[in-house]
Length: 269
Ligand code: R5P
Image (cartoon, rainbow, N blue to C red; front, side, top):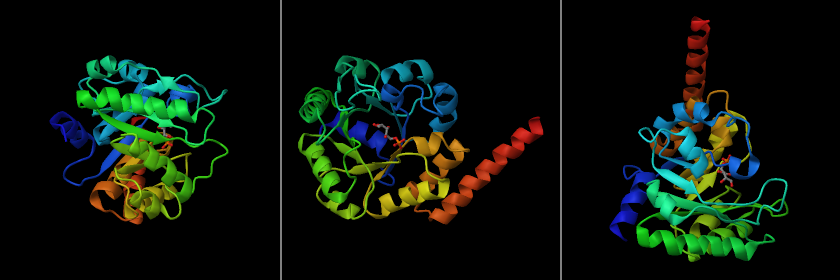
């Protein structure tokens, strides 16, 4: 593998564990001011020390993250549709020159396999691979799921394999029953999304299951930044991903951070 690409990948996937905790805060590119990210800088800043990488758009990166404090960046470079319209109708929004200027470790876009604009989204990913790889920048392929698509192993294996065949270096998908089948048929590493906000213990179980069944990490958003203790949650997720922690131990960690923060707030008032 090209040295620059290997170096950038190793900034995202920790060489000590071969795993990664990616923090996803790119939701606004089609959802607008997502709950928890209304003031993105305020939400993101305390989480930065615990994120192996940060996934977001150039707009949020420029306005809401200090360059001196940023972890490796996974830049969302697709968009063009909103929650009010057909989501699969995406294009590449950000040039590779800008990705280089922003010193990102990886670029990312979604593919909508089975979606109305399937081909367009697959060509977006292909274009990213064509433009990013010669510059040593990695590509994360995100398997987006439309309302009508079932998140089962058959569908997700199809979508992940297509992303890998088109050249993605890492694929992000959803955990599902028989997840091993998705892992076995995908020749590149897989990370899992968190999805809609769950009770904290269930979100930690999801992270734990993902790792146990072969994912190299998580790319989690709402289950971290919508938690009543975002720092507690990201630290608990890290314990599962990097320290082989059980769900119970990780949950205890989350609760202890939650209570410490609440006590500190009470003492200030
Ligand atoms: C969706 O297309 C975005 O890429 C999100 O970053 C992704 O869904 C992960 O965030 P969450 O854990 O909130 O699902």
